[in-house]
Length: 151
Image (cartoon, rainbow, N blue to C red; front, side, top):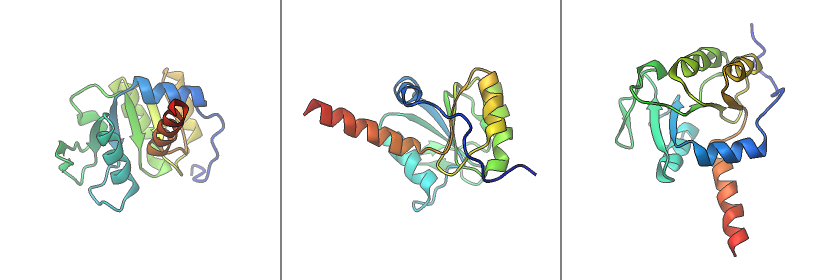
């Protein structure tokens, strides 16, 4: 059994995260929920409201914020740049394999999600990897810094 309580061995740098948040706009949210109290709902909504193209991926929902949801990453008919994962660590290797086949550029494992072996697989295929960080929080922090540097 895989170690379910890992610490990232090598995580994305602040510069990598800056680039991901500015360069990539199409985000598949794997494990997106239609329940407003769930983190995946809050993050997907925030990203959608901040100009990202959000693609919900969850076999148990048909849509989110009027956006069509897909049962799996494989079934998303369009290009995906970032795969934002809200699933248990043991599901990450399969999601990474789907992301590689899909031609994604980034694997983003949300807060509390780490899978070092899957991260290495993604990196070997040229993907950038972020683990145990919240995409919404990272975006908010950068927006806050940007607005305070303008004042």
